[in-house]
Amino acid sequence: MNLAEGVQIVSFIILAAAVVAAALGVVLIPSVVYAAFLLGGVFIGIAGLYLLLNASFVAAAQILIYVGAVNVLILFAIMLVNKREDFRPVKFAWARRGVTAAVCGGLFLLLGTTIITTPWAFSTATPVGDDAVYLIGEHFFSDFLLPFELASVLLLMALIGAIVLARRDFLPESALTASTENLKLPERPRELVAVAKADQPSN
Amino acid sequence: MQLQYFLLLAAALFCIGVYGLVTSRNAVRVLMSIELMLNAVNINLMAFSNYLDPAMIKGQIFAVFVITVAAAEAAVGLAILLAIYRNRDTVDMEQFNLLKW
Image (cartoon, rainbow over all chains, first blue to last red; front, top):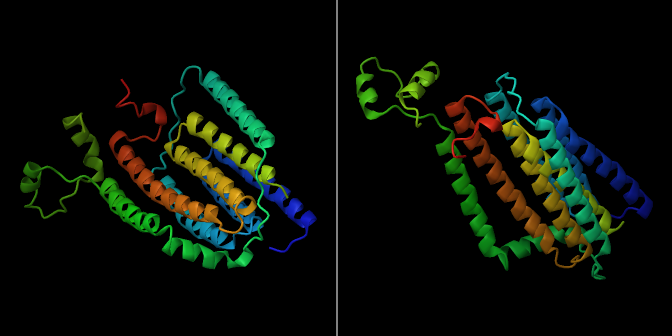
């Protein structure tokens, strides 16, 4: 990106403010649906920051994967488990929040001091700029070939694992043979879940 | 533009993620906080890649791998969440204490 220094600073300030505000909204807003949409805003702002950091390929990947896949997946999960319930109040919830906020603020101060006092070894090499795509491809197929292949195996495992975890439980064998006469799917109906849970408390 | 600005922003985002991870009652919001923390790490990697290693950009490679693992983590995490919801009929983190004591 060939932007002037002032333009870069102004766009960084705008993007950083938007990202931090949306992230605070994700954590603090009571409605979880609004939180999910604000999370999409955080992802888009971070993609803009990647553009400022001369990484157009990763910015596009960020929008495709995070906004397009992960955020939609979270929205679907919210729709699937959206049960209107008021959580039972726990004792000392305010103390828990206060201690956590103190610990997180202390962590931020620690990280900030480290960042500011560390003498970074800035490189003077010319940045690759828009040729980053070619360089990433060369890395993937030369010195990062094994992690690249392992990532594909990991994605396959996650795919199969998610299907296995999220599908419905099947009935045991005895109930299955008893229910074959009325030709229903061998799947536990939704309204019988509570009964089955009473039978098997260890489930 | 300086490296420190990006690192400070990433630190702030990470701390917000930690706060949400600990204090959230809703299990979906816990997963969202984990995504925030992963994105903070990604900002760090990209900033290092741009300012300390602009010729080889290995930080971008690492960020791509982190994005891959985050996608897999989100899928498996939400599947686990659905399984727990089907068993316990709630998404309250305070009630997921089956292995606690």
